[in-house]
Image (cartoon, rainbow, N blue to C red; front, side, top):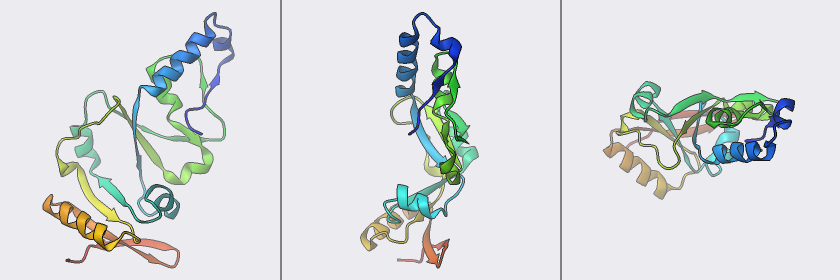
Length: 175
């Protein structure tokens, strides 16, 4: 449902319209994307993206992350609309613009996207990671493995606690 767009009427009149559309598609497929959210306590996101509350949520120190990522990396806030964006030309910037839109129904995600080269983007050392939140349904085995590994890196972990309809976090208790 993402990456959709509408061609501007002038673009549809272009002599090589199909070539332009192919170029837009090619540019979209050659961009690496990493998604971030401003929230860590969204039940739908824990259900969708963290294996039904069994996974983790990584909190980053944004200023350290920005200093550490490669120069050609860009952060863009996602736009939530009922309509797809209109494109009037082809190029890498238009591809990023197209990939920065989502349907309004997903606005609860409060998403930011990092665009970079395809493949792994290195952010250097673990100081970029502020803490890791652990899902309430994570297995005991995985919980111990994650906590032990992250504590060796001096990364704070916090356990999820669910109280009726509220999600909260507290420091991981010693193993």
